[in-house]
Image (tube, rainbow, N blue to C red):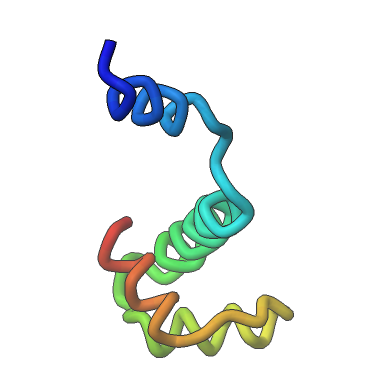
Length: 69
């Protein structure tokens, strides 16, 4: 087995990091807000709603998560 193959396999086995788990949680909240407003909210409005709810997250991160979702 190649050394690089072993380390690639080992990297896949690692649990998701703090940022990835936070992104997953934020994506769930974003989908909820998006669904409440029948899909008419874009990333600026969603960012404003998240800030009002106490989630301190940047607008570019919200835009990226909205695009992925």
